[in-house]
Image (cartoon, rainbow, N blue to C red; front, side, top):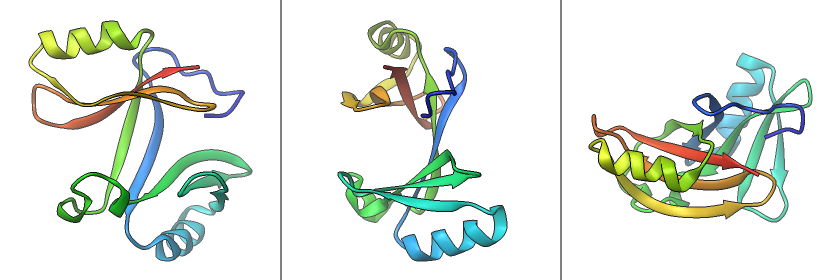
Length: 127
């Protein structure tokens, strides 16, 4: 997330492309959307930028558990005010936690859940 972007609870806060061909993705989104890219030195992660502002990320699908069984996809993250409360609501409303909360510097606490319709979504409690 950028310093100027302060998502509110309930809003989409991040999008991530999970795929296996970074160079093809860089070329495609550069040509189609005008995005540039910036590799993150301490992570196996790439940011896509529009006019210098991060708009999405790229992660090699091989680094995702069972990534060899998942087709390339765009993944969405939703903002929550309190991760513990959000996960309790997920569990009490027919969802389940797939990946327990973990922290990412300069972003916040993240958990991956499945909703009652069996769709997978990320939750973020921003720093």
